Image (tube, rainbow over all chains, first blue to last red; front, side, top):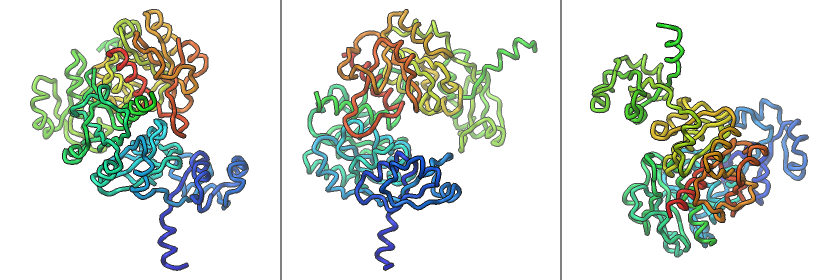
Length: 242
Length: 242
């Protein structure tokens, strides 16, 4: 094997459990190899009918899975992230940009919610958690395999790319000057979500076209990141599909 | 100490960290005692000025906290749950009922989100997680101390109590017959949310006045519990405050 091919094949991640394996197998050229126990191969015979399966014992499988109770089937997958330009180009209507989202469960939930709300794509920007972290993959519940996504080290580059393509960038910001439910959300939109603890840096929020706050009616100080993203993305979906 | 008083004093829980302690101290007769390290007592001198503080060393404090890096201040608090009838009676507009919500983070996030959306109260029904689990308390980010809540073993009793008080009970149900964004949400409403894995049992969903689905526009199969609750509760807040 040449050095080049080794390097290429190192861009791999694990899809753990039948749901994730099913999602991965539905993406062309994504799955390199499926590892399954004999019991799982029998149980998921339909799913694995045309897949490149290697049989392993329970112990070997457990070493591939970070789950407490592995389902017996894990797929070795090629990375799926697309170039930023591609992801922005397919975002005719709705894009979610995560800037410095650090918790794997939050990032995965935003990807799942963006998929549910009919978003076109997601960008994991800045120091956001690895999209291929097993907890991120698991909390997308298959949406990592449905939705185009890009990884972009500089959130400002993602914001400017979205604006250059005609998307209005809205920063979700508790101190924002626009009330979510008074905003005009009918046009092509990119939502910009910040870190779970400290939100968006001022300089980044300032790059957005508007800073939008979800109204807080009670005594809570804020919403958590994934619930805030759900409220924003569904407000857009509702306005765009009315 | 009489046996009776021992039994009474066992209905206690811990509020961990300065935010939670601040919330607890704001509730009359909630805090039995605050434990603080000398460093924390100095750091939070204003907060603890009138509180009944016992000084402890780092090691004793760590044994009271389930946090990886304890902030040095923990309050021993009396249970705060109110009777179901009281909680339903104060719910003039918006109530959230959790049925068999098992994950502490989810239950806490629903309480926090209900508070933010201006709900009047929450019911933790059925086999829902303990409201006083440290992870639940932490994920409410203070809202456990803001919002009236009840603990009711039978979710059907909670549903019927809400209906008897004139609230329309809406079951959040991916297979529901009503689209969230086509529903009339302007009247007094109790949302009924089910378990994170299996949703609402059919018999319980059937007791609700309507079963309401959040539209799924993409290829995700569903939303997770706390994001679904956020979308539903904010749809109600928006309709009721329009």
